[in-house]
View 1 (cartoon, rainbow, N blue to C red):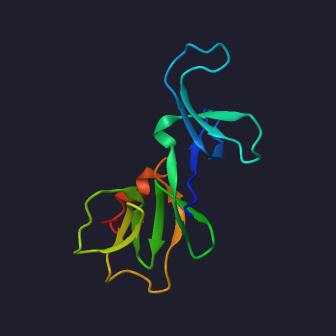
View 2 (cartoon, helix red, strand yellow; view 1 turned 60 degrees about the horizontal axis):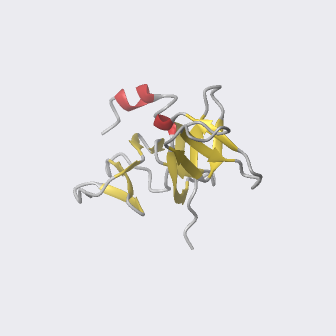
View 3 (cartoon, rainbow, N blue to C red; view 1 turned 180 degrees about the vertical axis):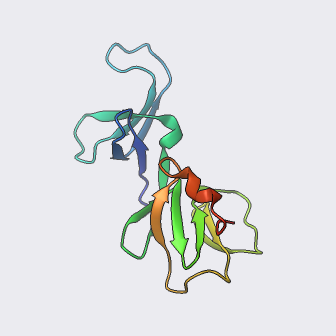
Length: 134
């Protein structure tokens, strides 16, 4: 069974993990419109997160056992890649495909032992400007 969950960063800079709810109306007195991630304890509480930081879990883990989410930046050997959603897969590159999520590495620079999360696009977008990024 697929494990569907998300992460998002709140305005204080804290990450939250769980189910995603998008509220599109201010009709309710208690909850205002926005993106919410439920807490992982299953209690009736959710954290409001910044929509641009929301990423879905891709059902894969890195070499250290850390869950990989859309928006993560991975490193393998001397190559780094951004995890992102795509409907189109370019067969000219090595692709790790997980339910529509892809990340590509230059096969000549890739470590055959796998990959690890080094950051994410929301905290270190400048890593994608490095010479080794495709």
